[in-house]
Length: 169
Image: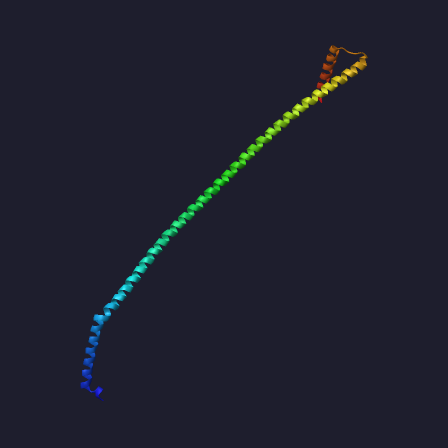
């Protein structure tokens, strides 16, 4: 068995070391630079991707803060608009109530004037009818026709009597 011969075995080790050295030199000269370059390029891309991801995250956080600020501003504005609408509705309600109260007072005053006018008209009619009735009664009691002076005197007395009884009653 020649492979176990020590002389042969030592030369075999020598050539294995020489061929391994040549292989390392060839790899170092031709294979390692492109592999290392590829690894460095990959490392650079990963680093750039991480930096870009960090920038995007920071940008997203900034935009989220802007969005939250705009959202809170919109909520405050909505609350303000709602408060203004409530105030305006309350003012309109109060204005309508005041206008309706004034209208009701005017209607009451008109009705009171109308009632007073009708009452005076009715009293005047009652006075006229009473005067005529008193004159007719007086003519029948006296049995003769009275002149204008008598008519007026008796009418005034009758009106006075009715007015006094009206005041008492």
